[in-house]
Image (cartoon, rainbow over all chains, first blue to last red; front, side, top):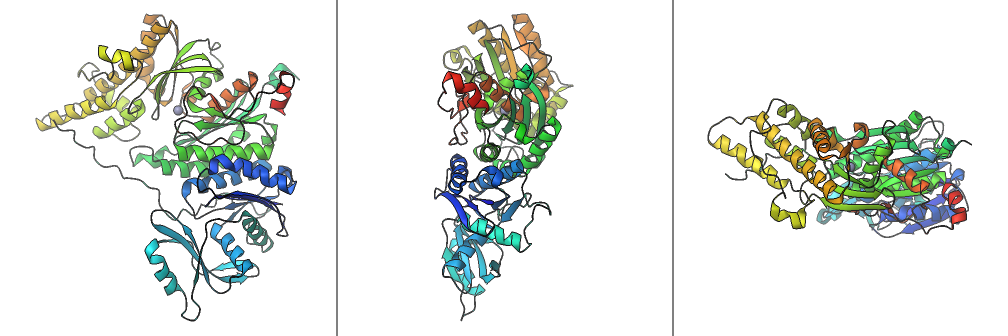
Length: 221
Length: 370
Ligand SMILES: [Zn+2]
């Protein structure tokens, strides 16, 4: 049984069995307040699935991209939950989960998952489609100025087969957990025997915001 | 089961600034105090960068919890409760600890206590095995890079009053800024100390902030260090403008003396005013030897017993957070509910955050430990 947690946009938690069936799900669209709500959502998803923490065999962590402060809360929760239960963490790119959900719905052909990255930028990842149930990336997650994104996507597609832009405002933790299960089955995610992925870096895509130290201002004599 | 075994086994998580602290206590017995610091990563910026600190917390938390558990010789499932700093501190840094603590408590099915960082600094004193029990009331002076607060503690778990705090820079920040002014590296405290060793603390009469008679009414127990920093800048600029060499040792010693004088004078004034012959020191700046010397000497003159916890418990750490939660449990407090967040300006009067409804007497002991 996989506990999936994503706080890259809103906050979402799901309990998904290894066959990909979502057993319990709880989420909030609020782009703030992740720290306040994360515990309630984990409890809610477990309760809806009628499972206890001891039934969880893997924890899937949505690694972003997304606004850093919120993103970290879900990853911190995923890692400590896994540590407490001595189970592996499966690091999943949040855009991959969104792409899986799109292809499972009605998307076909190349799509770009696009999320707000604040500061007048979008985060985007381009996918060709599914292969053996897993989304196939044709670009890695990256940032683009809001006004440049469409031109960039145009350049990434073929005239006959353009990249379809999909703006996403929430990530399904159910899709995240389902994807983690498929990654496990395909042997491309860590499993209990192979160690875990708890040290994977979040997809920040930006260096920390710092103003480099400059010489002290003169106060005037 | 012996009395000792009945004391709650608590793991505390502290991420309010640049130290990822995981502590484990059994009641008032310290079992582990694991600290991962991101200080080196901030050095080139001359101060703590919140985003750098928050990223470092996320990476350090898991390994720190594992190290603490190993050192304490326990299993996570043995814990009676999890504790976490809810505030005050850097919001983004606090949130990493809050998210982690909630998931840990749920995964282990243990109660969670969200507590106040400043009150945690006072609780650190309880973990000193060589010290006699803390007596109430006591005045507490907490000095670090993030805070400068003077508190009146009537009871650690129920009654802590803020007498005063800095209205601009924290004392530790003032050390960092003046060190930079003098061309010394970060963190400034130890550097100023080193430079001051050969200096004359009476060489330059730097101002004592908020210490005039006219400040007594509104700011008797408040601190201000930004004027002092400006005075140091002005003094050195004047020397440079006159083509004279800046006597770094004298400037450092005189600056340090001004900071310490204000801290100790105001703390002892509070002791006198409230008739409290006890002063507890806490916070990272207590590592400053000169501050400890002056506080002990002037405390003795004033008939005030000065307590200083071990320095490893004065800097930010998770053990003090666990210790405070253990006291709350011992006094019958119910756990925090799950809805709390990080509160960067949490007032010191709020010792525990999101405390649940009080349980009926008869079941409270069991419920809290369930
Ligand atoms: Zn502190």
